[in-house]
Image (cartoon, rainbow, N blue to C red; front, side, top):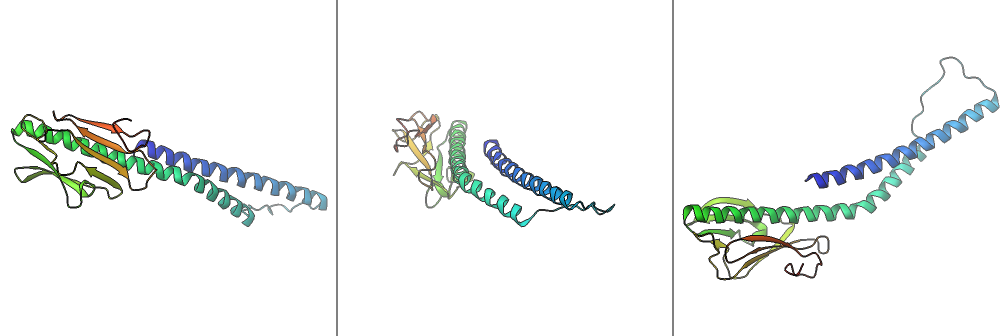
Amino acid sequence: MTAELLGAVAVFCALISSVALVVVAGSSSFDRSVEREAKAARNAAPPLGAARERGFTMTEMMVTVGIMAIIAAIGAPSLMAMVATQRVKTATFDLYAAMSQARSEAVKRNAVVTIAPHTGGFGNGYDLTVGGAVIRTQMGDPSVAISATPGVALAFDGYGRLTSPTLYQLELSSGAPGTTPKRCLVVSSSGRASIRVDKNQDGNCING
């Protein structure tokens, strides 16, 4: 959870708490006012030491819970969309970091370094390998769908370039359609990776 998500949760909780306190305080004040007027009308002075603390009534509790439920129903979709967006962002940055490391290791070792997906695709995780030896393993996130360029290996040679003659593209999207824009990692033939965002949500990261 990032600071952005934690801040949103804190604001959401604070809003619920504030509304609950206002409702309870207002209802309590009204009840106390009515009670004082009734006592004054009866002209019954309470005996010394007879004052007692008053708790919440069932009506107060029901009103508070009802308002909290309404606010939660309104805010839950936005919160879930924020969580989905953050998961896609995290998976994108993890892959970007893996590509940077793979390229650096390829140049340092003067050898081909491959980012190989686990069984089922990159969404299940991937390994950085050199000559069959694994130098790093990254676990996947089942809630993030990742599609790759079919039939092409994601590998860097000793010069830091892709071993394939054309660019390589990975597309990352949330498992909940429509909640967050797609993100793409585009690697040029020179080996440089860039992050693109499908801001207009037309399915194409290249045109924004």
